[in-house]
Image (tube, rainbow, N blue to C red; front, side, top):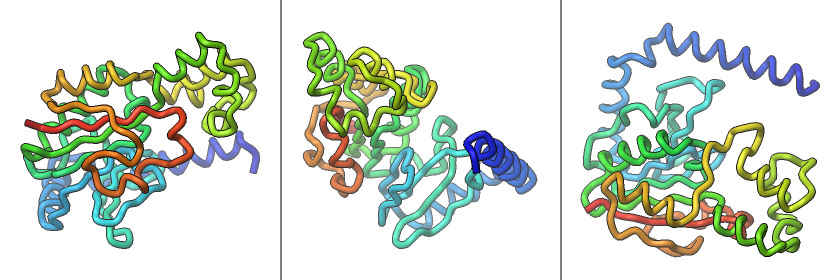
Length: 239
């Protein structure tokens, strides 16, 4: 199947799932209440934002994608999966989560939506609860570009995570990272800008950490080793 037909099939699947979700009232306040009760009953206090294909045991793994059935909590191995828009009110009790983690997801939201997501996370976390974020590091890319560090941009791991395979020069690869897949990336963060939005949404004790450093469980599964070269990692707490 060529890419043109793949896109058509993808859109059709998305339309069918969206229609089914509407018919089953999965976008309704009624379904929100059901989800909130379900999540309260399972008693899981760890939530992964934008999980992709990484379904962690003992976590609520959340993804928002039109091809997936919306608003239905499913058990996967020893974890749970939910297709849900986390820019909406979260279907968890306030002050109920110990950990929230998002690996390479915050850059897919613009600054306003990033702030909205963190407000929801802060509300859901317990006092003392931890949030962990990672994303491509604007500072690393900018320094490599200014210093004409071709070794950085030619590194196979940097090229592997570059969506535009036609990008060849450091400038092209830098901009490709900013836009990713024709605009899937909405913002480019460094530590300072991540710390700022965390502080503005009420978080404290904001720290830059390494890939396997910090209080969040399952870091080795959350954070792909191949992305360490380009990534900034941050943890913070709710007071």
